Image 1: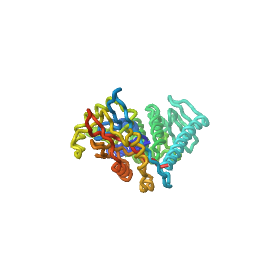
Image 2 (image 1 turned 60 degrees about the horizontal axis):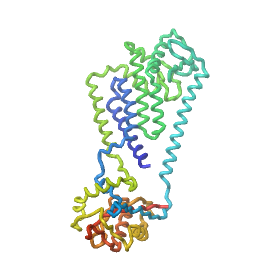
Image 3 (image 1 turned 120 degrees about the horizontal axis):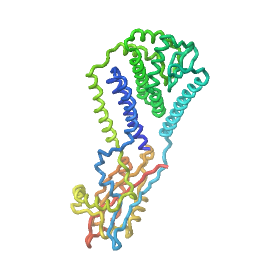
Image 4 (image 1 turned 60 degrees about the vertical axis):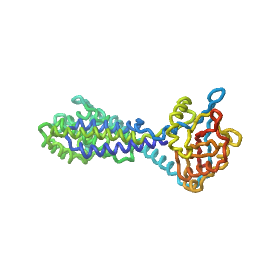
Length: 436
């Protein structure tokens, strides 16, 4: 669940950044083909990049997190003593299941948007079968009722009757739609519609979709008009405006785009200095990579998955730094000794049972619905006292302090021995607080 939330957070953030960058920097540039690919590739990168965990910023406590197991030297070799996770169970107070509500709302919204997309595609297929189709000038043309305006989608032009192949207006419109078909603009729309199904709640995806659609029109307009800018603009204004809001088609005269299209038709092409704006994509991409690295989650340490020999090496390499952090002992700390400390005349399981019996679920944590696993390490000094108690993976102060309280009240141990001498031995134990 944490990984999925991380992905959604980063993907939505990246989509917002891409939409803002394009709107503020590139939306007025006349390099339409370049803009098309930037919109598509930028959207794709925003969706793919959060999947990668770059591990550029490893946690400072990584060496401690790799010491949840205890190793000792025995006659038969290394014996593995594992302080199993302690589970503390409390009764959860009644609370509104916000996570479940949000999940249900998300799934419902995704289903609705997805069904609407399928319905639109099926509707176009129905029209193709319902109305007559003809082949003209290497184009499939479906003849629609007269109250429609011309549009195209996925290789088919939908044109209102009557159709006059000799009419200059018709030839101009067909040439416009041909550009959409030849450059496969319909696949761009399908792609962004699928993304919208997943991120329907993010306003950035609607902005990106609108920019892709109008950029398609800019591409087709610039390829058709050549020197006929004025007459082409007049044709846009004269063309009928009765087509319904069927938003993933390439419509010749989408009302909301007319003003921008006419302005862009009259605008001179961007000069070479405009290329510098595209170079700004480099720091934007670098920033997205940095964000992805900074939000990389630390992998939880599972005692059963740690290589024993690797753990032993890491334990020995950390002894010097542990001397600095455990100043009250002022002596060497061991992780592996010939005779492990004993609790109440027995092994580590006895201590585990004692902690299980004495830890109480804090009432304030129950009231606030707080749960999780507290990881703590401590030292059994040469006199058998539990000292140097440290939380190395915290959950909440109420839970952390309860674990510390119990460990501080622990009876004395029989200290561990190395070469016949009592020594300080460090251990670690996880305590899991779980609400019913």
